[in-house]
Image (tube, rainbow, N blue to C red; front, side, top):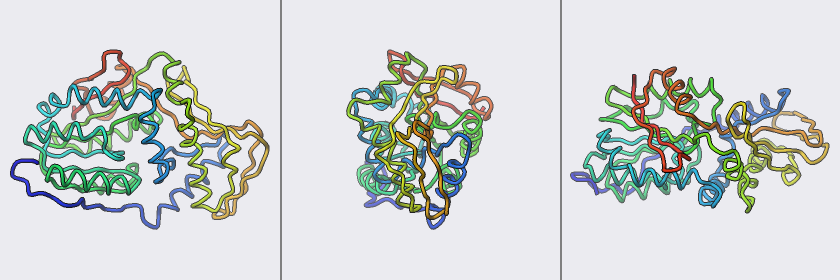
Length: 329
């Protein structure tokens, strides 16, 4: 428990996703399914069931990013704590904070840790992990349930040196233009003594990448199709979920994994809440996610465009994954 901190029994949780959440989904579905090439934003994969499925994916043998990133944190978290002197850790896409606890341990051991601010689209992980962390470290936990593309304003002002973390492959889910815009917004959350820690999946053998998104157990396939279940439930739609195939491949031109759902037959989907009928041809594809892979040059260019500079890129021995420690330029 942090020195001088009274034990906290539970996290405070602010729920930003109120009555407008279905509206946001409706807007995204209307825009995405009436476009010439159909697509849906990946944030809608992460309802409560989707978050549990993704937690399973993170433990699969083919899915190297989570265990590799965790190992980097185990080996280098003390260095990160010393460099940043952070009293506050803000984490976007926190989930159950499984990897983050290594970093929390290091900040706690350094005696600087005072507050943890987990931010996620799903409430149960925030509640469960937040309560555990508040009790374990005796610190304030201010959880935010929301969409970090529009709710970053709910993050409280920094009470000291801030470490803002976005781990895993979350940043890579954004296309390049949106990614740079988002990084500029993150830079705006940092004072002169603030730091940004980003998980970045690195460019590597395409076979390794494609295995990670096509696991033998089919969990990623279930996770991908879950977005159709979300639309069915929330917008009174009738997607035949089991008649879509999971597709994931490495796009060598853009250096990203492209994740799609492919219809197995001709059909028409009705979306009652939108009074919309959407035809699908057999083998027509719906994109649900991209996952960009980074070189150091790409990363530095994105950061520079956002007014940030790369201080250190911490990688594993095989250069599979990296943690980029950045600060305002």
